[in-house]
Length: 96
Image (cartoon, rainbow, N blue to C red; front, side):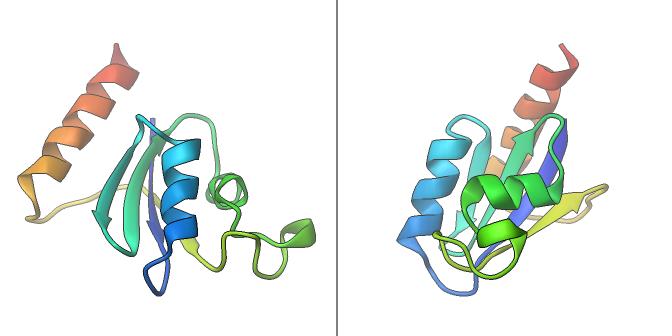
């Protein structure tokens, strides 16, 4: 399993639709401008392309607008309990 954080600079209905369509059961909406995604075998660039952030040839702004995708190697902290539960579930699914 790979976890990715997706961030857009302002609330974007297009980005929200793209995440929901590309990762319907594997995304957690943190707020209006960020999501956590669980996927297998994809890179940050592939997730960005799948969400429509990359323009022609992977350069420039794509049809969804501008956004950035970070691969998550480790995490720690305190946050909404629903996020921790979601990460536990997707981790167990990938391990099982």
